[in-house]
Image (cartoon, rainbow, N blue to C red; front, top):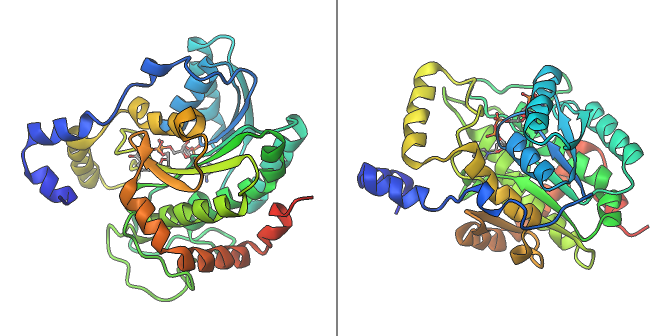
Length: 329
Ligand SMILES: NC(=O)c1ccc[n+]([C@@H]2O[C@H](COP(=O)([O-])OP(=O)(O)OC[C@H]3O[C@@H](n4cnc5c(N)ncnc54)[C@H](OP(=O)(O)O)[C@@H]3O)[C@@H](O)[C@H]2O)c1
C-alpha cells in the first residue's frame, strides 16, 4: 500500500497503523551500558540529535556535540545538564557545509580523545527552493551538508573508530531514499535541470547517497570491528522543515499528526543502531522502527554497481582516495 493510499484509508486507522511502530526511549534507558564510551553526534543541538545526546549522557557516555550554531549548542548543553547534571559533554564546532570546518572538527576530536566508539552522522538540512543552492566552494548545499561533510568526517575518524572497536557508524538517511534514483555522474547538480517549487531532489539525493555509502563502507570495513548502520527515524516532529513556506509547514504538520512521532520516538532507531546487541553483528543495512528495513535493503542489494560509481564520484568531489583512509596501517 502506498503512502497516500495509507493516509486515505482513514485517520484513526492510519494513526494506529503508524504510531504503534514507535516505542519510547525511556522504556529502555539504562539497558545498554555506554559508560565512558566516546559518542560523537553531529547536529546534536536540536531535534533528533539533541534527544540522542541526552540519552547517551543519561547512560554515562562521553558525548561529543559536533555542532554549528554556538548559541543553540550552549542552550542544548544547559538543557541536558539540567536533566543530567553529571553529563560528560564536549562541544566542538562543526559546519558540515564547509569542508575546512569538518577537517578542523576531526582534528580536535583526534586531539581530545584517544578513540571513538560511536559516530552518529545526524545533522541535516532540508530546504525547498526553485533554484539549486550552492556553498561558496560550489557544492550543492544538501550534498555537502548531509553527505560529503559526513563522508569526510567519517574517513578522518576511521582510525579512531578502529581504536574504539567494536565501534559503530550511524548514518541518518530517510524514507525519501527508498526508490529514489541518483545520477552518479552528476552528484553536484551541475547539469541544467528544471527544479520546481517544492523540489526535494537534492535532499532525496543526499539521503540515498548516505544509504549507498553505508553499504560500500561496510564492505570495505569487513573484518574490522567497525560496523555501519543507515536508518530512517520516521516522520519526527523537529525543526527540519522550518525554512519551508508557512502553508507547506501547515500541511506537513497535519501529516505529522497522522503518521508522525515525537523527536524522542524518532531517536529510538538511532539508539537502536548505535547500541543494540540485536544488530551488533550486522553492517551496511538500512533500518527503520528498530528493525532492518526489508524493502530498502533489497534495493541496496540490487544497486551494487551504482554504489561503486557513487563511491568513485564522491572521492573525486572530495579530492581524496578512500583507500588512503581505509587500508590497514
Ligand atoms: N525529522 C524527520 O522526520 C526526519 C526524517 C528522515 C530523516 N531525518 C534526518 O534526521 C536528521 C536530524 O534531523 P532533525 O529532524 O532532528 O532536524 P533538525 O531539528 O532541523 O536538526 C538538524 C540538525 O542539523 C544541524 N545542522 C544543519 N546544518 C548544519 C551544518 N551545516 N553543520 C552542522 N550542523 C548542521 C542543525 O544545527 P544548526 O541549527 O546549528 O545548524 C540541527 O542540529 C537529519 O539528517 C534529517 O535529514 C529526519
